[in-house]
Each structure stands twice: as C-alpha cells, then as structure tokens.
Amino acid sequence: MSQEEVTQHIHRHKEEAAVRETIEAIASAVRRKDVDAVLALRSSEIRFYGLVPPLQHVGTDAVREVWKSALDAFEGPVEYEVHRLDVAVGDDIAFSRSLNHFGGTQKNGERVISWLCTTLGFGKTEGVWKLLHQHVSVPFDMETGKALLDLTPP
Image (cartoon, rainbow, N blue to C red; front, side, top):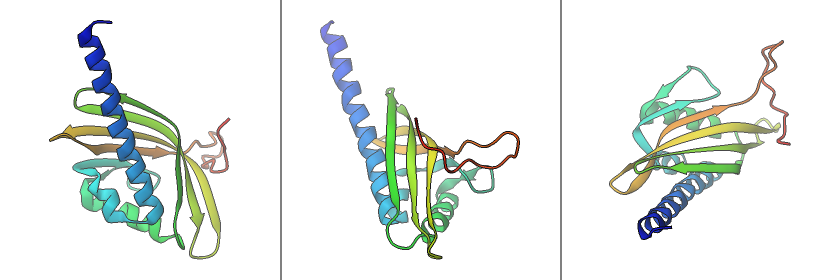
C-alpha cells in the first residue's frame, strides 16, 4: 500500500467514525425524547421518508412534527438501538443502513416494540456531518397489505 493509500484509508476510517458518532448521538437524543437534539444533527434541507403520511416530509419544521408526534406517544424514555450498522463514506457524502429496535411503553400503557429498516444519507458541511436523508420502513405482507411489525432479524 502506498503512503497516499494509507493516508486515504486513515481519513476514511476517521470520517466513518464521525458518521457513526452522529448516528449514536441521534439514537441517544431519540431515547431521551429530545427533539431539538435530534434536529440539531440534521440539515435544514432534510427529507424524511417514514412510516406516517405524507410520503415525504421536507425541511426541519416537517421533520420536527413527525418526531414530536412519534416521541410524545411514549411514557418515559424511548427504547432505540441501532443494529447491523453499515456505513459508506465519500468525501462529502455518506450513507448508512441498519436495523433499528424502536419502541417502549405508550401513554395508554400499551407496550410497542418494532424493528425498523433505516437508511440515512449525510452531507458534510464545514467539517460536520449532517443528516440530509432519512428513510424508515417496515416489511409488509404482500397479500394483506399489513405492516409486519413483529418480525425480528435472523
């Protein structure tokens, strides 16, 4: 390996670690139900494709409402863990994919836990990785059209 290749490898490793730190900071903010902390890690140009209508949520205000509604449904802290995280990093763009365990006890006393398929896209601005794209989904039964919320990873 040439010196340039070694330098690039070290740089990519550092950038991947920075993206992973951002993902953990997002997860920590979700667990605390701290919507402002969640939004601080996102670009103002965020596009969020999630589990609730409409098909696309654009910008900080729209994403704030989605997170506020989702997190307000729970009593106490939210359970949120990132599993099987893969990160790919370029010069100023990075993507991750993971299976995330999300839920807790709702205010009505019902316990709800689901596995979510999550893809995140990041852009680097002024040396900081910010979330530009978030897509969260769950598998569904093709015959009934119903979400399969009780699946677990193999």
